[in-house]
Every structure is written in structure tokens, then in C-alpha cells.
Length: 345
Image 1 (tube, rainbow, N blue to C red):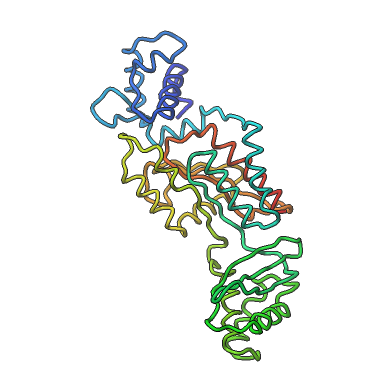
Image 2: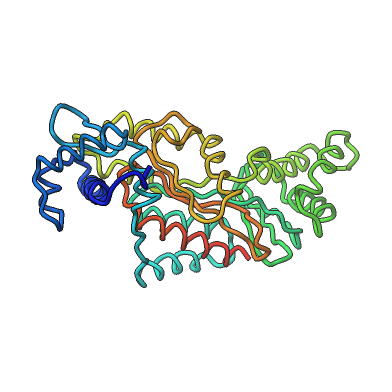
């Protein structure tokens, strides 16, 4: 459709979308006349705006002369007219610093990367964290407090993962030692996925000599790592409050509520993020053009990240109103995804 527009129509359309992304308000012909490098009368601009509206690229939110881009118009703008910016040195350092500060905990690094992405974009940050698929070198249960224990896992490539589990009341310290010894004998040198079914069969058939409390610790330890077995990863969301920062009279609060609802439907968001699994680079889903959930006023920018073997192991991105700063956020998402790939190893 972009190729069907003449140069004047393309420039007027570009100025309308730029002005809308800056202010969130409907854009009138006089505003465009002031922004144009070439002198055009408001009447001429109004005629072009009417043609763009007929083409489905603009709409009038009410009876005023102002126009706003449709989701289709935004999609065309991003695909054909958007000029991507570059990250500043400060932005790169901010992302790198937050990721590096977490040592070698993958989940901690992803949490910080998501916070950095949220802070820099002004949107909510999303990341699909990969499951631990490396063979284990060490697993251990550590007592924290009554009813809570820490599961420490170290993979063969040196990545440390920690998760807190609930433990039965009155659990003796010997049960944690026994659980550690039992899982160490069956997991070290293998991935959890490889050993999971075998261990569960052993426990269900009582083929191992573990008392009831120790068995519950083992089952809790496995459950915390396999709780999302069907979706292939866990979803981390940070910065939801950013979605409320820019609410104006022109933003329907119902759309913001719908955004929060979408973030709570984790299985849907994981499907959205998993679309990046088969794609190269940054993917952009704008408003109603995203058929995975019935939601308007929302855009998602997402990019996969790869391990050292160039296998896609997860995805990171942002979600926010369609009036987001695409030119700035796209390179931030792209850079963060590449950086995570280096840390994941």
C-alpha cells in the first residue's frame, strides 16, 4: 500500500504519525502545514488526509478535524517509513551494567534486563526465560527458615540457579540432606527433563526408600523447575505501572485495564513471545493486527535471544500503548536481546 502513495501523501502521512506519537492527540491540517518543509495549504492537506482516511490509514476519533493513525496505518508506518534511532552510550552502559550486576544467575540477569528495558522504554518489560536445559553438575537443598528451603542448581557450564520452595512443617535437617543425595544420584550429568519421568515413576511406585517428608521435598523441588512444562519457559513482567504514567483524556482507561488483563493471561503472552522462535530479529505486533488476543490500544515489540550455539532459547520485549516511541524502543529491544544471548552462553 505504501508504494501506492505519492511522495506528498507519504510525507503528510509521516508527519501525522510523528505528531500523533509525540502527543497522543488527533492531528489537524494546520499542525501538519506548520511541520511540512514544503508550503501546502491546510485545504490541500485536508484533501490528502481524506484520501488517507478512505484508504484505512487514518480515522477521526470524533467530529473534530483531527485525525489519528489506525492500527493498519501504524503498521505501514513502522514497516515503510520509520527511521530507527541508535542507542546512546549511556543506554548501552545502563543495560550492560544491570545484566552484569547479577553474576551468573540467569534468572537474576533476565529480571534486571527486563527492569532496564521497562525503564528505558517507559513500557512494561517482558521476558520469556528459558528452562534449564544443561546437564547438572550440582544440586542441593538448603534450609532457610521453618517452612522454606532453597534449591541450588549448578549446570555443567557453571550457571547457578536458585529457587525457594515450601517445605512440610517440622521438617528435620536430615530430610534436606537425604533429598539432596537422592536427586544428586539421579540428576547430576543429566537435565531435569531427561530424568523427570523416571524419578516420578520411582516416587509413585515407592521404589525408593525415602520417608514421606523427604519425598514431599523432592517433589516440591522438581515441581518448581517443571511447573511450566507445557509452555517451554517462564514469563517475567516488570514495569506494569509505566502503562499508567501516560494516561490522558484521549486514552480509554478500559484499554489500560485490558493491557493489565493481557499481562495476567500468561499463557497468551507466552504464545505471543514464542512467535519470535521462528523469526529473525525484532518482531512488532500492533493493536488489533495481533490476532492472539482481542485487544486494541496495545503494541508488543519482541526479539528472540540465542545461546552460544545459535539456538533460540527465549525472547524479550515490551508491551505498551500503540502510541509508543517505536524508533527508540526497537533498537533497545534488539540490543538487549543480543546482550542476553552473550550472558546466557
